[in-house]
Image 1 (cartoon, rainbow, N blue to C red):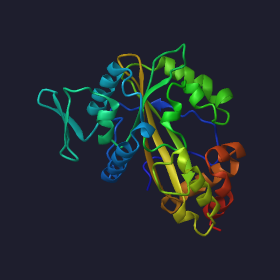
Image 2 (cartoon, rainbow, N blue to C red):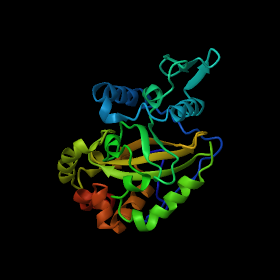
Image 3 (cartoon, helix red, strand yellow):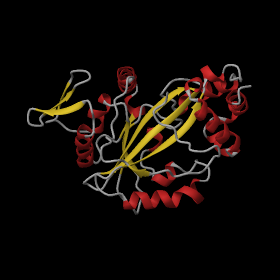
Length: 288
């Protein structure tokens, strides 16, 4: 069963869906898939560092603030020895905290992808630092330096519907008062890393989806996203991707997803990579 589900009805909506993160809720999660996902993330960063990690020499003050905030907000990381060491209680590793505290230092110890947007209103909050190993159809290396609006320019209806809300949110975000939202998709392959380089394989896999195999072949994917303004004024963006097969959804969740897909605009289905397999997925969800 997936821990987050973004729908409350059976019709598609261009919903911003941002809400305050409850005080007792941490921005970092540790799930039963922690060890598997950390292994994949570390292998990606070791094999293709410039593809999954950018801007590591930028905004060092904000990176230090983010490092400390992530440790404080994590259920499996703790300070030790007068805050000179961070202990990863899940792996037993010791992270020296008297060295540069950067996103790249802490990223291999958390399941979340991590991004820092500069708190620069004039230039539209550009992406300046990022460690993103589990993207849904985008690359952090391609987005470096882009404003938050430019990053989302390919999202259908973003400009007329969501752009003004996004700008207001970024401007009004208060220090260490995080907010969160959910993003969703359906993918025909189980890999968390769905960078643009895998687009051809995803398209081929989508073309092979039928009503008979969709339940086991297709994965419902939800990103739990948080935004936190750091003391420097820059903004930390975290993304934790959860997924399960369509078979694992509850009866109610299948019914809601079916209704959303039936009423979803074609350009949005295309943007999310669902269009080639939408009809067989809907047939599956209807029980055909």
